[in-house]
Amino acid sequence: MSLPQYKKGGYLAAAIGSLIGTFLLMYPGYFLGVGYVKIFMPNATLDGFIPPFLSFIFGWWVGQVLGCWLSLRLLHYHRAARTARLLAMLTPVGIFFWVLFHIFLSNWMGRNWNQLDLLAQLMHIIMPITVCFTVITLGCYARFLAQQNTFEM
Image (tube, rainbow, N blue to C red; front, side):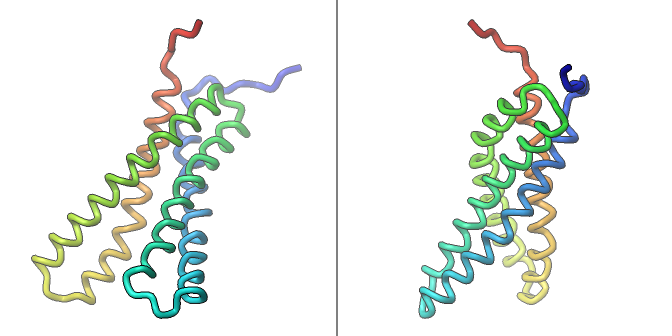
């Protein structure tokens, strides 16, 4: 007896699984990086930025791939592993463009607004929204690419 297979595309499952996995590993990774800097690098200046940033990026990458794969696998969609592999390849590109977007946005906002407190608060609001948009876009695009019929010999 086999388990039932869903015939739908699996885009919603890929997007929600990616989103949940990302936020379950991204922020704990960031806080572990901050803890590492506080304990082992108490006098760090610019060097103290690297461990939290790398753990944030690594948590995003691993969480998104595992969340997408797990949601598609638990719901018995076809090509869950292919979607996860494609997502693992697409995520660094998406993160790179997300970082570029935030650099340009913060520079533009810093030039046009003089209130640094408002700028910092606004960036704390914009960051999770843009992360959600990027994660959902990457998850759906990886699912779309995985659904394409390919010639296999």
